[in-house]
Image 1 (cartoon, rainbow, N blue to C red):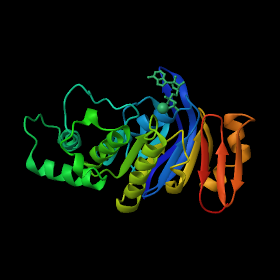
Image 2 (cartoon, helix red, strand yellow):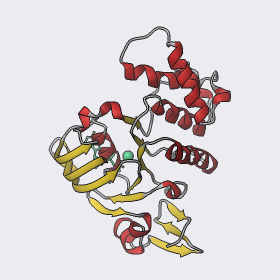
Image 3 (cartoon, helix red, strand yellow):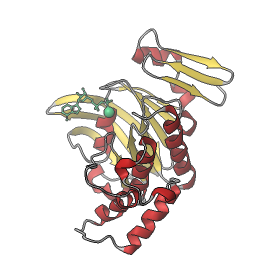
Image 4 (spheres, rainbow, N blue to C red):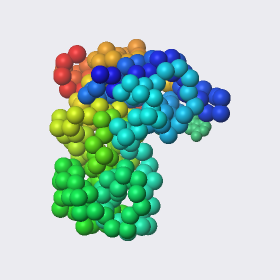
Length: 262
Ligand SMILES: Nc1ncnc2c1ncn2[C@@H]1O[C@H](COP(=O)(O)OP(=O)(O)O)[C@@H](O)[C@H]1O
Ligand SMILES: [Mg+2]
């Protein structure tokens, strides 16, 4: 089944196109890395798939439905999370909110069944030991893992992650990338991940899409990440260097390397 299908999709803000004429199909279960320079339209595409933004022409389907009819199938982790850190919620409570929000009822007490599932989700991302710590006191990598656990609470079939590695130091990036890898291996979920630093994520990307206000390239990482394609988006200084069976990609503001053969 196709998780996402776009045909001649053009997304606009107040009549001004931000991303034009995009056609692609993402099969269920695949992980797509969405790349492009700042302002390319990455967040715009994710938001439109998630039904947070509705101004588009062309066709867009999520599991064969219009995005706004597929909301319960979608988990979305925004780039800068909207969580108010002044509210002293524990890690466990933040995760449990993922289960409550979906049910759409006002609550004063979190049901034990939801707490149970939240605990399982926290254990899944390796944070069982900090469940009673305040969210705001966690490290950047831990916060991002808590937000992944929260997104998993609704058991989404499509998980949309907007720059989950941005603003993290290299070791925290590796920590979050490992959790994303675990989600890919153990949950039957389709993922779209936008990223600047593709380096820690290339191993889990089945497909790569490069956009710059339009679709530049879409396909297997080896096919998309070529010198020619990368230069066309990031300028003549960008390059892809094959090195010992890996790809090392220099684009000025981020670099890439990839295991596996070319
Ligand atoms: N709410 C908005 N209103 C008007 N224009 C917007 C809005 N959000 C994004 N844009 C424009 O759409 C384009 C793509 O932005 P965005 O999707 O955020 O890019 P990216 O996530 O790749 O950095 C940019 O030119 C940006 O200015
Ligand atoms: Mg963005």
